[in-house]
Length: 417
Image (cartoon, rainbow, N blue to C red; front, side):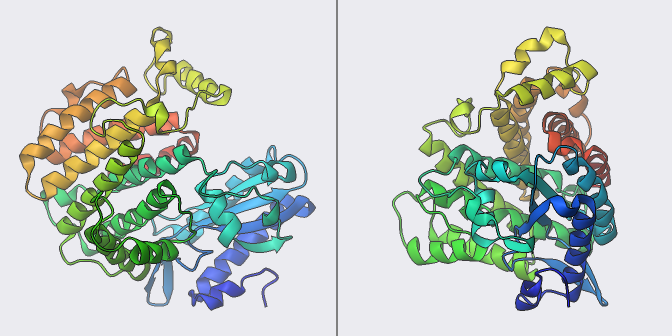
């Protein structure tokens, strides 16, 4: 019998390897933090019964993540860095065959736990998290409701879903037929990202529900039928149901180009709702500080200055005005344009695919003063598209600290795609 609270693994009929891996993670956390650990909470799809993996001849390849919130006595200080190093070894051992898998554990003090921001991740943790070790301290987390949730954080869900869609697009889709493994993986990625559309949509409708399945059921029950806004329509609800089977059961449509097209359409509807709520032009220059969080913090600006100083972004002191630029909106527009361009190309609309690259160049130019589309004009569409992806990945690695720590992995990933 495990020393940790892992009964839910059997309840959810997870492969036995899941409980074994979680037990190894708990051992590592316990050895690293010792008696200072007050609580270890698993959250995310694994805690909700929505873990996805591929089983092959008795082995298990995880496609879902293991995400934890740890509460410690006193300030975590160096513990976060030390624990991340230890968990990276397990991540490699458990997920060496999975480009999607990672282990993440954020440590906070008891005082910090009480002051956590009111965002989706913390709402899900409080509602459906599983306490694997220590005391159940979720009651000390702030209450997150549809009335007080940070909608700008909710909106960033779309940015990160587009990041995933662009990051994992395989180049074989443009020039040839991808192999079965890569085709299956990308189909899963499309379905997984679509499942977060209700996560984004429902708070804008005044509804906050934890879990993919529960949100899906609410939409089917409350929003089926003709609606005047024609954004959340029966077609979108049916597609969400189809992609839920893809995410949870690995059941995908036979024609991947259709799945890409419908994914692009679903995300465009989500963008329309977001822009409509904030009264901005979805396809043009927008006051993005209305939509995304304002990252004018001393920590954020300090990191940006460091990036300028070490040349990570190809910027210099003469580019200091760049510091005042709201970059989340530009990155969002560039990622959305890249994915829409890919979807158009895959569905035979080469003219539209090429046209969409023009605005992408404009957004990238605003994001990175050193960017020039001159290096992206020759060769087949796949090569030119991939070069623009390389630029946006380079920017995101430098701009987002959590991605900077995965620089080598992300560079290998896009080289392999």
